[in-house]
Structures are given as C-alpha cells and as structure tokens.
Image (cartoon, rainbow, N blue to C red; front, side, top):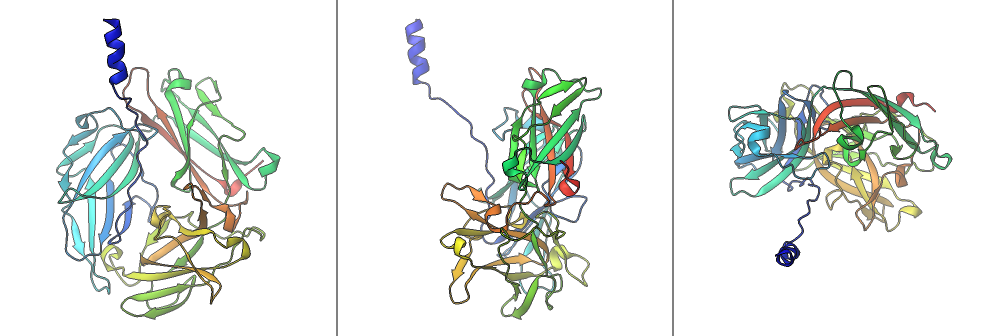
Length: 414
C-alpha cells in the first residue's frame, strides 16, 4: 500500500506558481492610468473602501466593447487561494459602459473610464494585491495592470540615508523604516510580516520579501546596510506640450502633418557630469491642455520625437526611453534607433498632451536594465520611496496590506 502511494506521488506533476506580470497593450490602446487625488499618474495604492478609477484611450475609432476581470494575489504576486466571492462583492467580467469620444482633436479616439464600486462590482472586500485585466468581446486579453489596496492598521516611518558601503556612498540611497503596530497585534512578525519598497512608483525595480531585523516593544525595525539600497539615478528629463500649437518647455520646434509633431531638444548623457538639481515629478506624467474643460477627451495626440546625443560608450547598446507614461516598459516601441548622419539616437512616440517625465536607460540580453549607465547615479537625486507592509496572520489564507509609508530623499542624511 505504501509503495503504491509513493508511486502515485511520483506521477503527480509538481505545480509551481510564478509571479504574475502585467500585459502591455497593443498600439491602438494609449494613456492607461489610474485616477487618484493627485493630478499626476502614479502607482495605484488605494485605501480599502476608496474608489478605483481606471482610464484609457482606444485610437481605433470604432467604439469597441471592453470587459474587465479582477484577481487577487499574494504579497509576492503569486495567485491567491481566495475565491472571487471572498474578495469581491458582486460580479466582474462586465462591459465598461462609461466612454466618450474625443472632441475637437486631430486624432480620433474613445476615452474609457471604469469606476469600482459600480452597479455590478459592489466593492472590493479585502486588502492586498490586485490585477485588473481588460478584454475584448471575443475574450481576447488587451492589457492588464496591477494595483494595491491597503488598510490603515500600522504606522510606517520612512527615512532615506546614504549608503554605508564606501564603494557606493556617492551612488546609492538606503531606505530605513520603522513599523509601529500601536494596538494592532503582530504575531510572530519574522514569519507573518513582509515589506516591499518601491522607488519612484516603479514596481519592476521594487525590493520585496524584507523581514524585520529586530523588534523594540511594538515596533519593527528595518535598518539594513545593503538589502534596502537603491541606485540613486538622476533627475528625469521633462517636456510639456499642453499648447499643441506652440513650442513649450523641452520642445525645440513643432510641425503639423497629419498630426502635430513635437521635436524635443537633443539630450546628452549625464553619467560623467556633476549632479545638477532639476525638479521633476519622479517619472510620472499629467494629462492636460490649455483652454479646455475636459482634457480626458479634448487633449490631442502628438508625435513626440526623442533624441539623445551619441557617445562612444553607447555604441551597440540597446537604448530605451523610460518612464511611467509607458509603464516603465522596455520593448520595441521604446527602443532608440541610431542615426549616423546626425550622430543621435532617436525614437518617436504617439503621446497625449500633457507634462511628461522621461529618462534613457540601456537593456541587456538577459532582460535586465541599467538606469544609471547613461545618466549616472547620484546620492543627491530626489527620489520618492513607498513602503508597503504585508501581514498574514497564522492560519490566514491571504496577505493583507496593513500600512503604507512614504519618504523622499530630498533631505537625505548620513
């Protein structure tokens, strides 16, 4: 009997769960963002009970039908074991009914807006990691985006300091934080608590699975030397084209063809230049235009031409334009092409009017990226950091987010 049982175990395939990855949209879907209390498009981290508002544009002009599905995940973005009825009241897989067509624009598009709760999806019941996926009426996946729901159970204090490693003291920033549980009981925190640190709203470079070093009373202390360190990077470049008919900040000149074209000033690599403070919005963007009441449907789409001055060390490198506006993605649409006649790298993107942050990075064959190769790494760079604290009590089946803290390196210290 025991022998037969062992043979049965051998025949059963081993099932492993990998981290879910966001799916980027096709070319006709643009400007995907979550609305929040700020005008900037940021990483969606919302308090339990708040509205979730997802917006995007479809440029195919046929007022297509789109549907949404919502899934819950563990802290490490592996699938949660919760049934849908345990984290969602009502139903998903519903058509997005709220959409408007563009008004007075050269580029015709339909602007879609999904708000949760709505008449079908009454509420999200628990905190944690979520993925929202958008489908066509043929059940074809169009794109997906991550968002987080948290409960305000603990206080999270965040401080940014310089690296302790002398080798990186001029280039890295170290995140220290303290979780104050107050009256909320944290049982066996070394096993039940996980923390995630996110730099400039970029989930792709987040540091996760961070355990507390030690506890003092009702406080969890995180003061690692290297485990919570990030490359400082450099300030983002930016441009503004809220007036489509005039050259604004960062734009050298404009041209009108089938659509407006904005040609940005050629940027230079900054890795070997001294750090210069240049206020930015940490990789985010804002949709806006002048003399209109509703930028969501009245802002036009413009071809934006990026250019980077070529240098010898950039030869044969895979260079990409990088920012929250393209979800910090690295693919063929973000890759720069070398133009030997002008000795520059160039890329053109169709973007909605607004204020945009961007930078240049290089990618490697193993899909890793280097943000500092072109623009350098400086400890003085002003970055924002968010710390998410996950908690799964003993015997529970999912990871809550029980607190969120935020810190800036504007006042970095030793």
